[in-house]
Length: 399
Picture 1 (tube, rainbow, N blue to C red):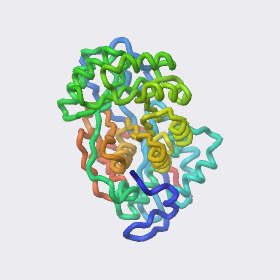
Picture 2: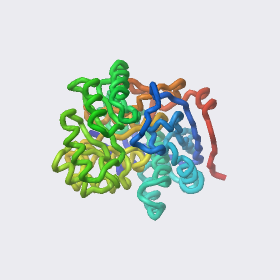
Picture 3: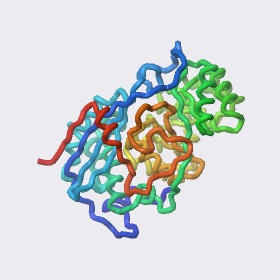
């Protein structure tokens, strides 16, 4: 587990090269990128049990990444990413009008900025676009801190972090069609994946996935808050023969910790966290016994600072922490670095999609990933791909 808490990073963590002063933030650049992909569907899925705002829906044929590049007075730049997808117009506005101007001139020490931002923006909600914008800023500041320390981010968090990690295939929604579900699990298995996450909600679809995955493969199911408590309890009984590793966000609303706690006590296997009300909401759910698996998302939860606090809570409470990651930009790179600091059974979530073009080395990663040795996140976008798919760009700068 990571042993460096956010409170150790006001002036960056002391490592072999000593304690570093964090220079001032001089600019925050916003970049909105939209890349095409194929989910490999052989036909339209017909009836969908997810809505068109869900990124696993057939409505999506392109995926957006709202990236930030934070510049500091020492000439460095660090990368972050805000959630995401169809909420990007609001996240962009939060970065351009609030969070970017707030950051200018401040010390780039992550914990210092994080504390100040929590106080400054607390009235704007514990999740949502302002929080997503702050998550991107925090991630970029950790990238910068690791660069100044001269180590990959994972080594700043934990000097004993791994250099290689595993990944699981996060499949999109296939309309509850068992034949189609089995086909795509088979495709992922042929690509070398040994663990799979579905976005289906019927016993037949889950059973088909189990058959295609094999009896021992970890199989997770994300139903996007589909049921009430009674419906979720029935689904857990229905899915029991398929031996799922976890049932993700089974009830609406997603932060109904009391219902989740009752389900977790009765059945186990409950996971959530992507849509928690910040780190405090997620830790409160963990403390209430609502979760077997906590799934913070670095582009939503408050960045790396908040995600590490959730990891620390997981260690204290005996709750597994498996970061959520339906990204392809800097948030993917950050999550991969953080997974390397977690127990070896924790895998990186990667969207199982076909990408005609890839933005950086980890984009479209397979089941086994060798992490870069470069200081920081190690995120280096292909400038040609970036230029071809850049939708919008804006820099918020001093002066």
